[in-house]
Structure formats: structure tokens, C-alpha cells
Image 1 (cartoon, rainbow, N blue to C red):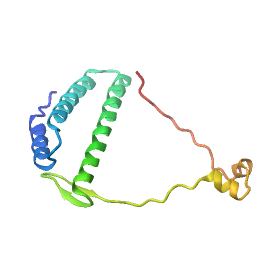
Image 2 (image 1 turned 135 degrees about the horizontal axis):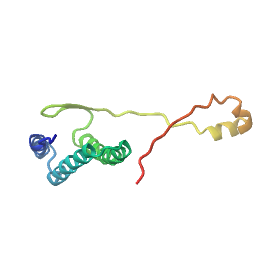
Image 3 (image 1 turned 90 degrees about the vertical axis):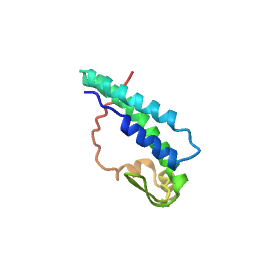
Image 4 (image 1 turned 30 degrees about the vertical axis):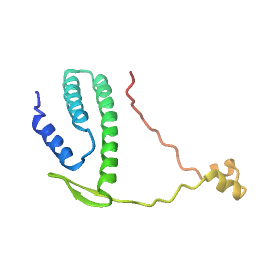
Length: 134
């Protein structure tokens, strides 16, 4: 089943043209829409779930990059607070997070060896990972 992305792509182009001036996103968005249409068609034509995973994994990685870039652009353009687009909204917040504790330095400071610390380790767990390969 084919989907017509014309309305969605025109909306996105108009939104960015009005709200994010100075960025040449028209070409990026058109390329992205074409790539997404091709990826959807490719996934739908594949019968093997391993092949489907590989295609979707590549698409997900590409989308993750796009999402990060859009978030950076929105944060730098609009700043902290709630902001509305034509259909959706975003909330930009700034958080201060404490750094991690250097466990090796802490153990050394109190003269605790790695072997002594092992007695406080929790139970092991099994983790199953499935990663797409080429």
C-alpha cells in the first residue's frame, strides 16, 4: 500500500521556511521523505524478519541523527520554555545533573581492594542482544 507524503512534506517545508530561517532544510527534508518512502517500500517487500530488522535498524539510526539535529536547532532557536508549532508543541528544559562517582578512586581512597568490593556485587543477569549486521 503506497502512502502519499505530499501533504506532510509540504507542511514540514512551510513550517521550517516560516520558523527556522537561515537553514536550507528543503533539500534535506525532500531527501528524507524520499528515503523514508523507499525504506517503507523495501521493508514491506521483505519477507524475512532478519532482512526487515536490518533495513529498519539503518532507518532508525538515520532518524536518530535527524531527531538530534532538530532538537539542537529547536533548543538553540527557541530557548527554554514551552513552544508551539502549527500542530504540535515542545518543551525545552535545561537540567543540571551530578557527575558520576569514580568507583576506582573511591575504593582506593578507603583502601578497599577490588576483591573485597566483589562481595557486594549483585546477582548476574542474562541479556539477549540482537544486532543487525551487513
